[in-house]
Image 1 (cartoon, one colour):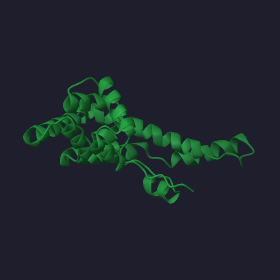
Image 2 (cartoon, rainbow, N blue to C red):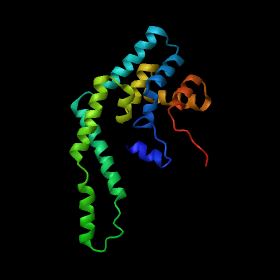
Image 3 (spheres, rainbow, N blue to C red):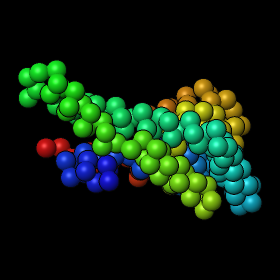
Length: 185
């Protein structure tokens, strides 16, 4: 719903919850593992281990609650930022408008729907869908260890160099496929 709204405004969005998750998308992870020389069974094992570690990182009720809370906070923040009180001339009018707008948001239903979406992605083992919902900067450490057997900082440095110098064209191409296309006006 939000993506369609933004698209109608000419604003492109990522297919993931945060930019770091692009490196975790299945085709990007595969390109990274292939750039590391992994093939056949070893390639599949690395990709499966990464996917499983990502799923396990969110499979507890506590983790799902944490991400649902962050999601609800972002939605509330968005509503408050759109709250236009310019027409209010009294404190009563401000209070009335504020209560009306914030009362429209059912936080429990919103969080419940979000938790259901995460639960469905976990049940179906749909990594792309999970990455569209789940924001956790720590996931890059999983990619580092499973795809390159290194630390997160080293992985991020390698990825930066790869994107700048185009030393692994397959990786660059896989990442670029998921980034919004910039159209000069």
